[in-house]
Image 1 (cartoon, rainbow, N blue to C red):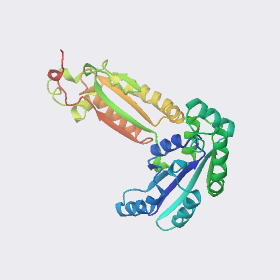
Image 2 (spheres, one colour):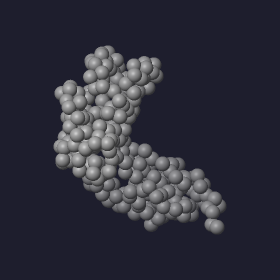
Image 3 (cartoon, rainbow, N blue to C red):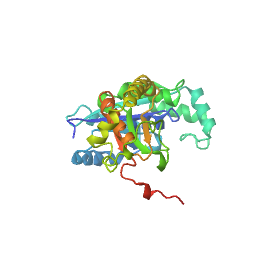
Image 4 (cartoon, rainbow, N blue to C red):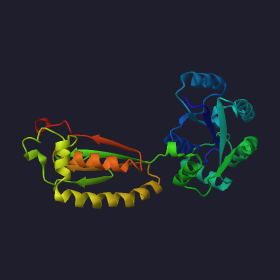
Length: 294
């Protein structure tokens, strides 16, 4: 377990974006809990310490927890700046007009105005949350923020190099087994000479040196690969800047055993210098006989 447990308490006005915030922390690798009853917190901390497997926690707390915020502040102050834990409170706010608009749009009832005026509930909640807002290390006003912009703001404040969310999935596949439905970019390399027609290479795959060398030594391969890699280097930063957390690049040949595997291997080795990369060879162990032609 890390030397210190990092705890972020996500709270604020109902309708200000706590759900989006929790999803953002999940993408940053935090263990997220939504409205754990206050009385269970001490036991939860003990379980966390004993497990030794959790280093970052995001805890959402709002009026649904039926807990008094002064109790929450008192309990958190007992954990803060200890050898075991450091805490940070993230408070989400929005203007009254925007909160009213969001409630009207979703047709939800405010937790403090189940049978009364919406504005009465909002005003009562502001009064109740005033103390914890003053205790917050970070206040984000979401009045003019879209969900995506709120996510970007949270990433800006809490993302580290170790928790960088953008990563690349590289997938080799065979066209005769179907296109991968989760691919963002698909590259067809069936124009390259096929090792399948060389008897000694046919039973091998692109992970074997003989096949890999054969594919890479083809005159067409180097010219194609140089252009393809240059294209990816120019567009991947754009995907990351747009807030995409996962980009799947699929490379396909006929059977998914030779050309696509070799190129996926080379691409993964070179991209991992800059990005977290995972490579999968979907059809490397399939054969023509395994195709269901019914």
